[in-house]
Image 1 (cartoon, rainbow, N blue to C red):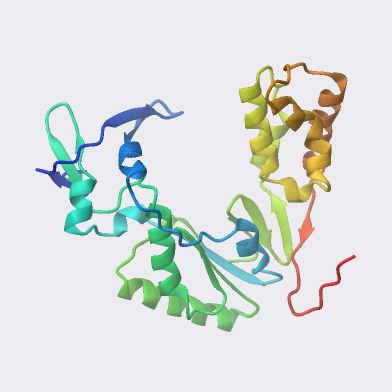
Image 2: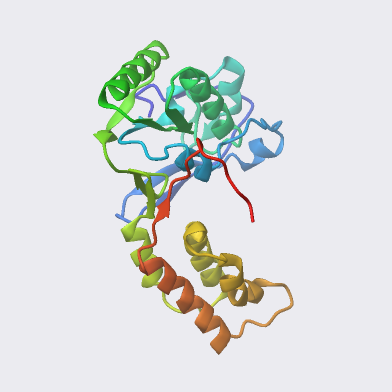
Length: 275
């Protein structure tokens, strides 16, 4: 990071610890623990979009492109004051970030505000932090939107990660869903992980399962009712006993998600009728 100008030597009075977190492939991720900094930082309340809203807006678009901004946060330079606050210690030196680091509580809001300003006047373009998507009904319209987006990104000196980007597709994987041509589906690999999830033996394992399944709750009608035998086990002062009722709820959630459910994207040009 020092060679790539991500960090620099520091003389700051601030100092956060850093740790190496093991990754599944056996390598390590460098992480700065900003918990103390976050505790005394004012909150930036700029809103992060709802994932469902980002997906719904794509509707029945025929052409979809998605882009990932390369190491998104690191493309945002810090002020001199912010650099001092970002300082962290290693066994042999004190460093500070030159760019916005991961782990600071206001980083998502700061990045979302910046990207929203960039894409504000681009029709058919949505941003969820560093994930951008462009959608159109015609090829000509799509190419025009892409040119507009790339011009704005170039002016902002932002770099796109081409490895994680997809151009002019009928369907793309976006925010944990397969979307395009007016349909929304869960990612197959994610559903397979839910299907293979073993019976939870602890509250922590149950919370993990409900977190995985809950991400796709919109594909399961009355999810809260179906999952209630499971969520009831997480209540305080309730003994963790896996009953036949909880087993049925557990298996029913799996059965619904592995049935390959598909949602039709809403058409916002039509009137919505509520029961």
